[in-house]
Length: 559
Image (tube, rainbow, N blue to C red):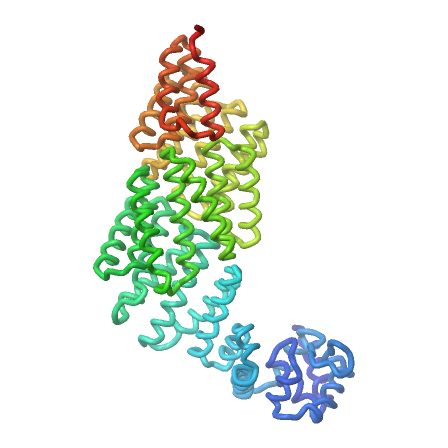
């Protein structure tokens, strides 16, 4: 603050006489304070303190809430509080913070439990780092339970910084390990698996875990490293890390570790396009998870893992044509997430249902579900999931005529994921962008986008939507007038889906292929293509299945 203003405030405080000491102690408590806490800190009865508080109010140093006899006071301006703090010698400043913290802990335990970050602040300013770190952790855990991940992250960073400044010691290492794992969980919700900060938190956690006796929480750190590689598009490395995680869990015969490891295996296999293997692994993960209810230490991290495992298990069923099972499981997952009231789980469950509607052709239901997802994500700062929802919303908007609005949303998702180096899903978003670019009248520009999508997919190994990309490429080639190449790509899309046992993807590819065959005078081949794709979905009533049946009916020869 300007020197002249500072001098004026100091002079104003100096004129208060004995009330100045009251203002100094109050400034340590905070901008707003309770007179009971102030009296305890000053060791004065209320009757002795009241005249000095009255003088501070009359001098406009403090404001009293609730009129005469009120118990809550507030500094009239933050600059006045700063000036009062600045009058304290360093040792007295630290001693007062320690005293205020101790009084709150001992005499006002409900307040300490409700606002642990207040105790953390006082212990930090008192130069009591070990005690402060514990309270920062409590504050972060409380914030995470409320879904306030950014607030939690700020508190965890403060606690970690204090611990890292202390001498090396197993107790300090264990405390930091706990906080790094919590930070990884918060970062996963906020920035996503791929963020550099997320990877650094889990790398540091593994380093600490491996140096501690018994290697506590090593599996949690290894799982975090796996998720980081998985989302950054290093799918081969992710599979290796999942296998290492599984080996570690099997060696320890840990149900909790096996739940996490099989989930990691399933996620990796899913992104590689190995859907039956993925489903088996994901189901084994859920079986072990059901046995670990009393064995959990990191509830929020495991909630995130379980919700993702359930969603990917349902998507694997969806792609394999087991639609009724998938929808049932997704609705149950949403109900469980809403009961738990964990924002990340609720948003993820809404997205999973929206993705199901997208894959089964229920465009309006998908848009409604994903708009809910985006609203939840924006409220709670879950950016990467919001981008996944926006990409699909954009594609559907473009499909229904809003090419400019749809492209803007898809490109926002591409740009965000590139910036975050979350490259696993970028090929799929590029395919969406290419499809809308072609619809907007630029098939040649769209083909350039498809080339980049295939190159990224080959580099990462994320082949789960290779059939979808081949189909989109074929449709774009058809718009460009290259019928022969279009047919080749559509046939490749069908063959790829068959190899992956992705019944739903096969149907999606069979519809445009049958249309192309019919246009070129090969009605019998068109009917055979659609009939074969529909056969495994005989009892399904999803919109894409109904459209395919209608198309087949049109292709039936006249009696």
